[in-house]
Image (cartoon, rainbow, N blue to C red; front, side):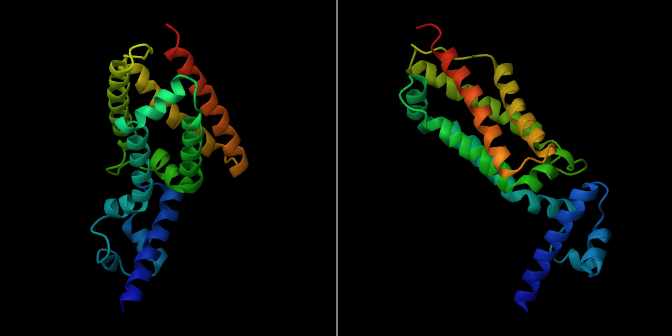
Length: 209
């Protein structure tokens, strides 16, 4: 019985994901999902309290990965590696960021489509904007703390600049998804993007030496 419940739950998730990708959150009803799964509408509510809960369940792995990337790349423990990058002693940061972007886009392409294009009407409709603001604040705190510890390096203190930096990241991801690039093409695009971005950061940080 438990196996059947788990199977039905996964079938609901898989089917709902396909419908959300095709029609969007707002234009997909629980009745649509129930009919596609061949169960009664009331039965879906035994697994998910609402359509929004179902949508959030589908996107939960992506949300967790985005939160992980934000905290991992901008916590204070990361500053030693950032210093090694800034002074030109190591490019390990570039490698790590490239791998993180590739995993994100390659592993969560459909979920990114839902979050970027099909979330209207759900509680995740403003997630990108909320994430951008939170990430902007975290980057600013990180960079200001770095400057205090390492005053020889220049950093940007303008919130808007960091805001645009995060917006640019999502625009880059969005364009990759729109153009349906292969895994190899994604890897090359990310390599170019990260190199372009990080070379600029290193030059800026060392401009007053």
